[in-house]
Image (spheres, rainbow over the protein chains, first blue to last red):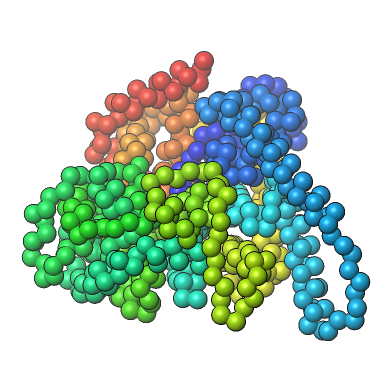
Length: 186
Length: 432
């Protein structure tokens, strides 16, 4: 696994940067706006900490860049790595999606509906299990950013990385929250 | 398969991309190592006997499939005089875990080298041993004395139990284990991560002998080469089912790693159940992020996290230290040892300590306003520090932290000069 503490350091640094960018903008934001800003900068910071090496991070950045308001934030956070990272993220995501979509269309066009005869218990159970797995895979794909366009193997790898990053994110945020609580409580 | 059995042994920690010793990878390794088999077996025997006489200076490890020659070039220059240093056996097989710690950044590279399969002559090995000795003698002795007995017995048991190439894996793990469990995990993870990146580039050329010999480059481009897979006995041989089988194996391998990562998945064996757990875990993590961001939004009416009072954070550490499950911060590690391993972090902590020593309130203010970006590093590092202390009460821990940090500050005060310079520079950058 990649070094967890350095990941956290990177994430925290970028996150604070992003928050400064957000905070310097509007004043008197409502609590929901603040929460969105916090979460957004956290997500982008986390994704950029991966340097575009994983698909989910690229997908997050691409999604964030779609909205104009976020573009500024993205630019600031990715500034060290330059605009090229952002562009390449979008480009890669588009390319991946296109490829997978083409494959899927091909598959559907070739698939023929089979007539189901009476089947044995074992086969029935197997098909049920398969369907369950497929259903769950679809749910997982909806959870992991950019997951709908990945095949199974990729999906699991990306999930691994994503879980690790999420954990780091939660840890850092939790500690920060506690710290601010203490500061305010004093 | 035997190899599968090995994986959990090194696991129990977060493994992102673990040792990819799939069928294909192992076959490749097998071809390459056919010449080395005898030598390695010998060395393995020697290794086992070495453990019983672990001195302060040397780490014993098997010959690693690895550009140890590469490692040598990166480290201190070799001293062949080391070889006759009173060891009973012919080859001093010494490859130190300490080596990575000498070059903090070289750490990854070294283990990346290890993961490659190439021949490793004894001279190179001895040279590496010498490098190890030169670099990290005292540190290594600490590590060895703390972990030696425990690790050696573990390693011996493991080594005897498995076959040849599997021993190679274990030796990589085991020699790392000599120091601390942290290093072991790091090794495995880095090793496996490098394997994984190699895998992406070598992706499907594993068994083609010629191409697999070229281990120097790691390219991220996936090459559309062919997979050579052997059909197992009694199984279908057409290409579709073979491909299916490879795919299934890959999936199940990765599911195993997920099992280690997601808590509470040890009992579940089916794919569907595992996926269920994974989904639940990811959902809960995402929900936590939402909740925490809401909490932060509520706590900060102005989104100003510049008021990162160093001390507030320091106080939070004892309670929060458990929140940083930094893998590899095993309780065996002592602070000085940890400091030596991470010179970069050491500087940061030193600064933090120095601040507290000199004039806490003023320095804190100065530092918070001038260098908000540097704070995270001290923040996180100090938290790592407190992990080694037991967390009784707040006051006690705060006191500990002050003491520890102050000690470090005294030790490394001379290093703060260049660091503050960089703080000013980063401050300027930010204000632009």
